[in-house]
Length: 290
Image 1: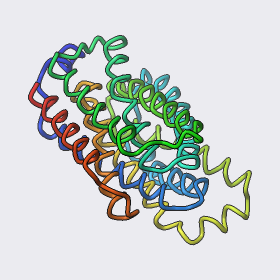
Image 2 (image 1 turned 180 degrees about the vertical axis):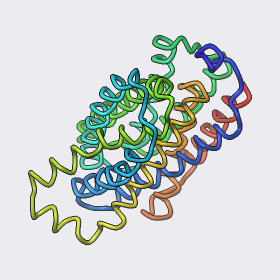
Image 3 (image 1 turned 90 degrees about the vertical axis):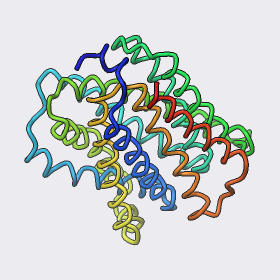
Image 4 (image 1 turned 45 degrees about the vertical axis):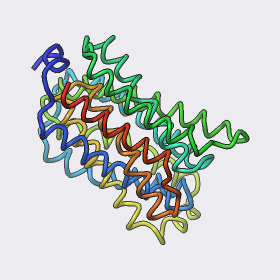
């Protein structure tokens, strides 16, 4: 299947389902990362969980094609940057502020990169779907739930996180297609891109970090497992659908995050979030029907 076909043909139902399940899992592990008070401890446990999942997969999965290794290396570096920026975002701002901003930045940037790099020119309907999802996510941030102006670091970290998300989404979209082994690609990506943070964190904080992670290690490692499953599904979907469409559908995770925030963290779910939910749902439908 070539890039031109991916950009014009309909998206199979199983690919849509994979992207939406990935969104659920992604929101779940981010809620876990937000729930753990010590953000260094939370991201350390999540990335450690990813690393532990990757080790047996590296041994069992078919190795990725050598042509994909430059993309693997680039994506691993981007994932390290992503984890650091995500940790800063959650340290400076609230989940319901920084997460939508980071995730909402990505779809339009991915659409632009996919068009420029892969020649995946979106149809008018697909572009309308991406725009609807992005507008819905932006409403969650800027309408009815403002980021306090004294926290520009939170805004900057969230925007930077979104740009990195767009970059690694595009890089992985190319790399996984060249790999001819989705499982092998995700295994090596998780190992190369996630192992650095727990090693560095334990080296810097030592016993203090051990003390911080001890009460929450089970839930933190579970977050890592959810992260691997979520991104594995997205990489599989990217081999069967256009990057911009898959990226846009994945960003519906913020709606799940809003529900989790309302239920678990007692955050409001008023009219702005209801309307944003409708916009994201409409965007997914437009992408699927385009």
